[in-house]
Image 1 (cartoon, rainbow, N blue to C red):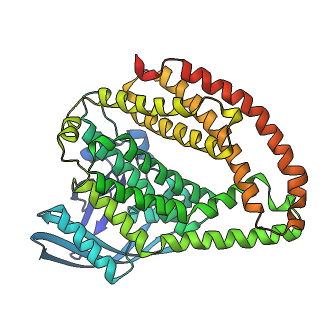
Image 2 (tube, rainbow, N blue to C red; image 1 turned 90 degrees about the horizontal axis):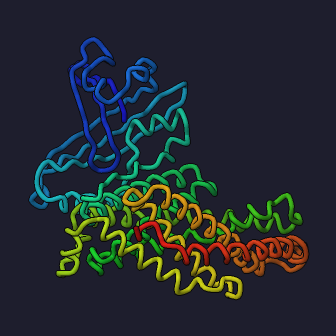
Image 3 (tube, rainbow, N blue to C red; image 1 turned 45 degrees about the horizontal axis):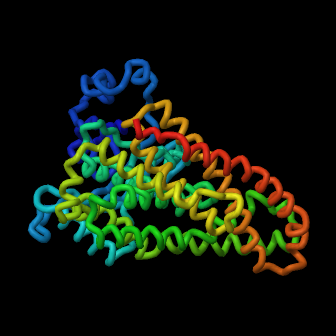
Length: 435
């Protein structure tokens, strides 16, 4: 939520409360000739009294707006160009944004215009409003705040659930991309990749509802994003296991240079036209309903009960894991990595559908899946580290290959015995959705 007191060109003061994230938000507005009115009925309805008493001005936004309303592809669209600054505690942040609002007509026209504009200038779809820009001055981590998980009941249709969940995932992807582009760093990059993987997982979980060519295109976009950021993430993980102050100086210098190059490549990917197109295309695919499959099977699935749909989707994922997760200890690293990916997909799916099943059973299953995923992830990171270090001068990596890596390998292999046993017990028990 954001609460603002705005002064318009006629020097009138208007108080506005905005709620929500994404392309559709609730907005309440009323005159405030005497200044901020924290006792207004609309505020009392959503903000507790104790919190209202603690509210105080946080920042000031000064904006010059140029605005036009016109007909475009049969739709009436309002375009506003906002330029200005946000000020707080002697700090300033520049704002320059184009806001498009559909007054009437097809949403497709709105996205067509956004696409045309992005080819004229390097504009990128953003969910950081002016209030969020101001909060970044107060607390830079504010940009990390995820979109709220949509709530649905057992009566929610799968199609509505998919659209709500992909909206949330897409907002988080855009927010994490902005955070990484501005602040950089391992945490921001990891959060970006998790957002992409969660969105990609939804495409698998709900694939029976979707138009296949469109879903394949979105999946291809996300695969490209994960690929362009993979080197930076792998090197970040390597440095977490083997910090620069624990390796020979020559290797530390070489690693630092490689990390800088990999992050520059990732940043260039996010600054590219392809990434700007990715954000817009996915938004249009979700909002215009282009994701909906038109064949009879997809249409039937759209209107069935979400609990029935969830059970079938989770059972498929469970069976796929059972087919490949038999003997972790004897597997090659690449095969174990595939098991980890299936565990991750099952975990993401169960997190989505958790409200539909037993809270206790679901929480226990998710905890076990996360533990197994972490153990297999550590093993995969070890195998990736070995591959990465092959590219460096043998003399500089000798201490790692002779001491640190073998020691870590022994520890992880001992853990693998327990992990394999845990996975077998999990697959032998009835899953949370079976009751």
